[in-house]
Length: 222
Image (cartoon, rainbow, N blue to C red; front, side, top):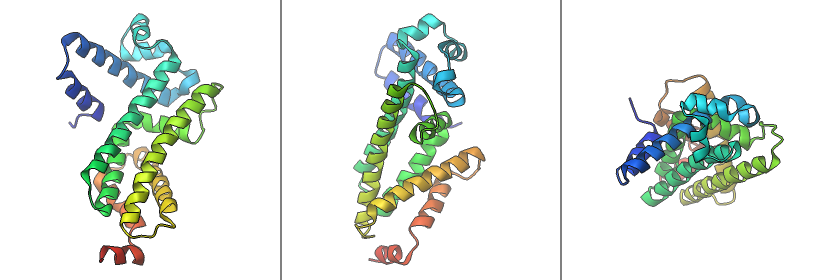
C-alpha cells in the first residue's frame, strides 16, 4: 500500500529528531488527521473538540496541549495542507521542465495530493466557494485568504508555462484560471465516483482538453 504524503513527510522529519519530538509529531499528526475528517464531514461549527479527541483516541487534555482552541486546530488543518501544496509547486518550479511536461506534472501532482487527502479537498472546496455559511467571519476571511494565496501562486506558475509554450500572452491568465477550474471539476467527479483512473491518466485527459487546438499543435511543432 502506498504511504500517504503526510506519513512520508513525517517519517523524513523523524529521522532527524529525538524520541520525544518524534512522539510529539506523531500525536499532532494524528490529531490533525482526525480533525480533518470530522471538519470535512460536519463543518467547523458542528464539530466539537470532544469528537476530535474520540476519533484520535486522545484525551481532551492532550488535544489542548497541542491546540488551544477549535479555531487554532481548524487553521492548522488548512495551513498544513496548503503548505504541502506550496512545497510541491516550488519543487516543480525547480525542476525546469518544458512547458507541457510542467503543466502535466502540476495536474498529476494536484490530483494525487487530493486523492490522498480527500477530506481536505472537501474543506478546500467549501472554503473556496463559500459553502460553509459559518458565523465565524474572521475564520472565513482567514481561510479564504490562505486559499486565494495558493491559487494565485498556482495560477502564476501555469500562466508562465503557457507563455513559454508560445500559446499567446493575452489569454494566458484566462487559460490558466480555466485550467484550474477544470482540474477542480475533474477532482470532484473523480473522487466522488471513486474512479479507478490513475492521476497520470486523468492528467493526460485534462491536457488533451486544453492543449490539442491548432495553436498548441503549432507551438509543439516549433
